[in-house]
Amino acid sequence: MTDILSNESKTNEENSKRESVNLDEHNKPQTEEHASVVAAHYNHIEEKGLDERFNSPIFYLRNFNNWVKSVLIKEFIDKLREKDYGRSLKVLDICCGKGGDLGKWKKCRVDRVVFADIAKVSVQQCQTRYEDLRRRNDRLFNAEFIAADCTKDTLRDKYADPSIKFDVVSCQFGLHYSFESLVQARRMLTNISECLKPDGFFFGTIPNAYEIISRAQKSKAYSFGNRIYSIKLLFDPNQGYPLFGAKYDFHLEGVVDCPEFLVNFEVFVKLAAQYGLELVYKAKFSDFYQQYAEKHKQLLHRIICLETYPAPPGKKLIGDESDYEHVQAAYDEKSARNKQIGTMSACEWDVATIYMAFAFKKLKHVCDSNGKPVYITKNKSRDNNTN
Image (cartoon, rainbow, N blue to C red; front, side):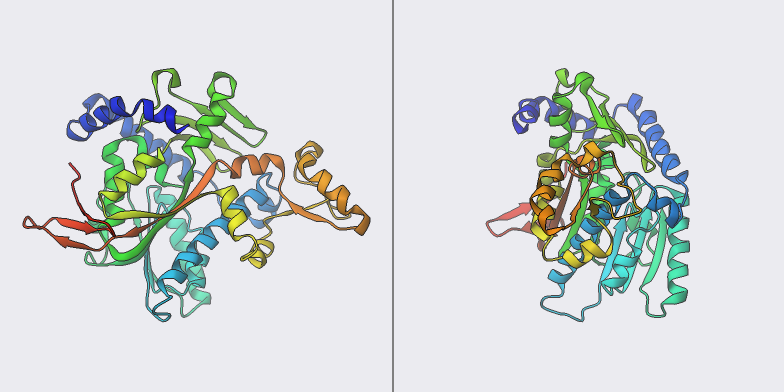
């Protein structure tokens, strides 16, 4: 998979350089149009009650994704507090949506969170949820809310305190929208990096481009999916895989129904390095589960990430019987002891495994004679050359 992308690297890098210097005016309205499509889509997603969530065909998938985010947040907050347990923490929750991680920041006892998202209605709903939570919790963190396109707008100009320094930046299931163009990716990384403290962490979750392309190559018409999701490439892979603007249609039952962009992870890492961000962790969701399932087993059960197989009396499985062939053999081995097994339907796991988690650490720096930061790595200094 890496070879496929690498074969196109010279041509694509040349295209990317031209794009960063001189944006084609013909592409500008398309970029604006796509941003409005994304914002409108998330603005129109209705807030659903608990009853409807329990009946959702992706109930366990959504809970599993929340578990991944919870563990990722806790693990890196704990790393920050290893040397100073009581330190106050400031957070930028970029692409925050409706505030799905409010409770996670509360549990981590952070002091301030700036929530930012392109969808104005989502930000308003996030603020309403925060205010409801604050009425029940006097010691809740302080917060501010910004409706902005984080791939185009300068967030620092919009902060209540433009000099704020963050300990953590979190971007969950949103960074890939910035890979519409090199210019947008740079703006997103600038927003992430410029107010992040040295030794602070930037972490998040994104679709795994290599997994998506691998599945697309094995399918007809470069599209694949199952009863709860579908993905179709909107570019001709026979012409190569663009480093930016590699668009695909993504539908996930009741959650997503709009175009997204592939993130070439090697390019992401190299680009992030220009902003003083050094990769310290990456894992596919399947590997993430293997790594942390035992350590965070109680949380896994508390937020109901796994479905009981076979279904308890009076309840039905969320999927069809064919969705559980993978667990049938394991159950047969244990059936003599009358044990039930925690699992996820094949359809839901198929979606979960197109995602990956990542984390970067902000490097310390010195300034050169022109006042530009020079980032300090273990082996050598890295110039902040973003031209």
